[in-house]
Image (cartoon, rainbow, N blue to C red; front, top):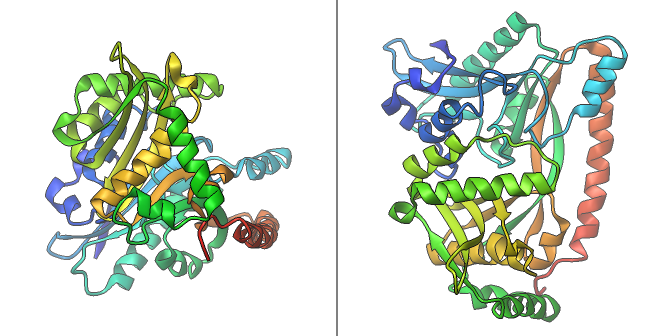
Length: 382
């Protein structure tokens, strides 16, 4: 086995990469990674410098890969380590650069150790990739290495290398075999069922048309409108845009079969009012970006476009899991239950390592208490 490094996904053979793409996770698809690069959303000046570690056999066949980024800040990660960086700074120790295995700007759980399905010795490929990542960190003299939003099955791979496993919480919706939206409502306690019905009924009087767009129905115009919605949301929240307009154009062009755009228009003028952009693949749907203009302040419009319409789509398609993004306790009453998410962190400085691992241990205890409290607000019938 040997591990090669590439600074661009376009230097990896497309067919070889296809064999590594996860069946239920679209964000490591060749098109998504290429769109991030081509649009300038990652690369020079972005704080995210991609390095693709590709493991090959003696014949040159691709066995596995690890997408890793050399980071010069902590923006766009959603697992917050700003306080760690501040503590390093106060003691005159550099925290950046660091290495991060993640999908940029995407708080979604998915595999980091990509593997060809027919690989017989997965442990050897995993070891080769993580050894290569360690050497990369040594060369760049990084303070630390991080793997974000790991699936449970990969935790032992990182923990066995001395990474500390950190817990976080998101709120996910799971399909319990519903045949239609009314089945989902019937599964809820009466208070929550009435709440959702009321929110949808109130929105029905606002003179809006709502549509689902995917595949060939998507156009460059839709990409441009959704980008404007994305920017408008950031402007209202005093945020900085991570993604460029070119990114939206590229993914709408190349990933339409994995995109669900929920669009609201004014019924009279047909002008776009709001939109929610989702990605889906296999058994999983991911809610990513939302935005509105003009009448975007319509009551309950966000809940309808970002949650209820996506749930309807998931039920229609038989999709098992809907991850609607980071944070949001308000999602519980709408059927999204708390779920642990995981990250792994290797801190190289011995004293900071001890302090951060103690913090992570205390944080886990706090989160465990929160999970117990959340159970008291389960919106589903016992």
